[in-house]
Length: 73
Image (cartoon, one colour):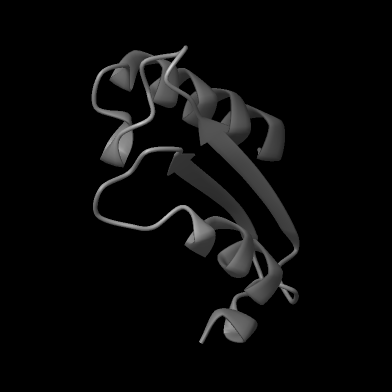
């Protein structure tokens, strides 16, 4: 039902997520074609945020979220 989303969307993806395959990242971004905007961020091993929910560097994920919220406000 991604086509029903009309608001701004932030997608955070861990490059080595063991629960959600990385191939889902681009599929989800493309599926949100009706969204007002889509911001996608991939976290890497170098950032220690490559796992599900960016475990290993939650602070970085929170910084990205706060910056996005501020930009969209």
